[in-house]
Image (tube, rainbow, N blue to C red; front, top):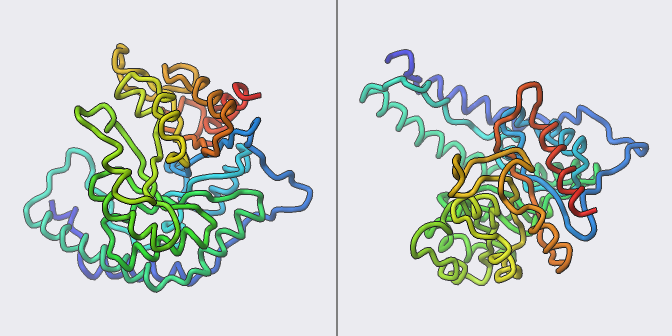
Length: 328
């Protein structure tokens, strides 16, 4: 498998290219004119939004993603990997093609390269001017779009990099940093959030369906810890109504990820479906928030397969309109 090997020289060239990209100013490839109506996806008190993960298959460009968001009429979002990728962070080499077996030498070489990428990313983060994030905020805010969460997933980073993540989030105007839920992340990020007067927000998958899972334990590690409840994953893994959790923890839930899934007893259990074709009680969730007026962001996370002839932008718009129809 010599073709899969990547030389150290080639890796260093890739890192240098990534660093060079950060020196290039943003290319604002479109103008936000005064004649363009700014988006508004707050419907009867419920703030609908999205996570930029929705566009993962088509773009990592900050200005392109903004165009997609505007096409869907969305005015607030959770920013994910598009932040650092859009700014030119050094990238790891692509994974081997499925079914390709690596030799032990290849594996050792890839491990060395991975360590090199990790260090290059650390240096990149710690040298990046916060003005880069101020520019992103201005670009999005000028178009009428707010960034309420920055999902850096930084719990495995160095202390200095976690400080960088919180400084970037504050510069973007976000109220917190999100990571995937783990015991280690719940312990690690809270103190940093407290230090920066921010929030440590944890996205859930199927943990609520695990025997003995106790969310109170993990939220209790820090007064800054919060829950990014994925209502679809919750229902898909437990078959229980998400409103039970939302009602109990609404003061500790700044954001909900919304998707339509089948339940665990379905013929295709725990499966992502187009909105309206799954079993997640989306309408109940939205109407509860409308009734109670709780300040919880509802962010679409598009994960079902894109139908033939469509694309993520069209599907995001369909999902947002589906939720608008429930709330109007």
